[in-house]
Figure 1: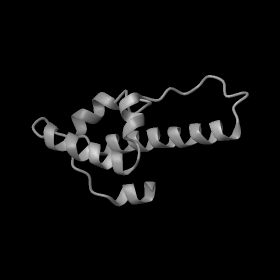
Figure 2: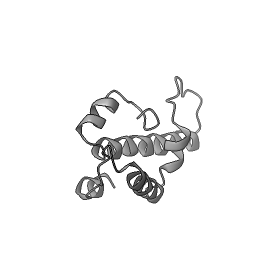
Figure 3: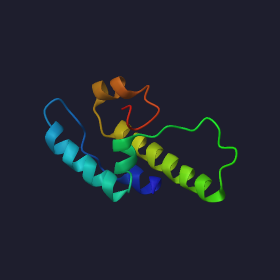
Figure 4: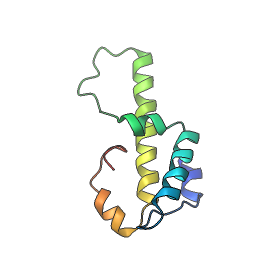
Length: 94
């Protein structure tokens, strides 16, 4: 999926297009099944000892969705916006 994302043209957020940009980003993130993790946030657990295989799989999928979204957001903002979110480690932070 990331390979497809690197080739997909994205609308860039500027000072004057937030409404249109946000609609496009929500649609894209929903298509990637990543909107919920962006909306609700993702916190990396400190300790996964005792996680079942299913819990580890779910964690891996959620982490992947969050990092994919963060990558999309980094690509979908202009230079001044990027400078503001460059320190973000989760999609909700950005």
